[in-house]
Image (cartoon, rainbow, N blue to C red; front, top):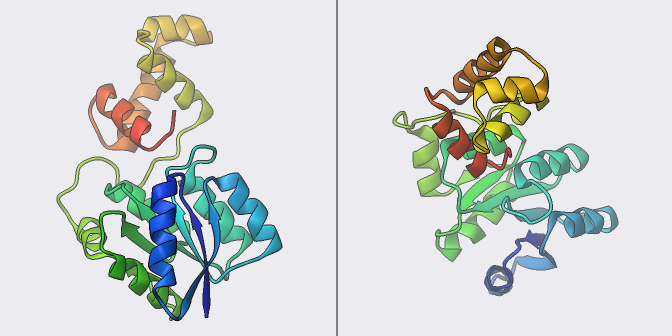
Length: 207
């Protein structure tokens, strides 16, 4: 019997996933959680075989959480359940060591198949995820960029409408330094304007 934890902040989704798993004779829903904190607490007491993890959680960045859980419990199979269909998100969590990625609009059979495949040692991606992952026709970064504390500060101020000169005064740095950081951010996000960076940073919860 494969024991599965489910973490999602939507009660309706949790009920649906639990009911789905209960239809299978070889899969047991062993824990239901609505946030990352409760999931981490439960894992200290009991480690299941598989974790179905939503990466949009109210308390912890789910992408960072997936890495933390993988590093702490390397034998635990992690399957991401998400509405995010951006290549950068998919690639980032796969780099974190997760074992599967299933979009939430997939059919129930995809989720059951994902659980069984990862237990067999395979990497599982639903059809839509694999198409996105392998596509050459995507804009923006291939993975979620890692930004520095200073870059985050500048990006936050840009979001609030500050000009480069105002940011320089506020952070006690030169306008040239601000422009250098802005240029570095555009290179990291593979875009040519700050508006696109703000959109990606908001989607990826970097702000």
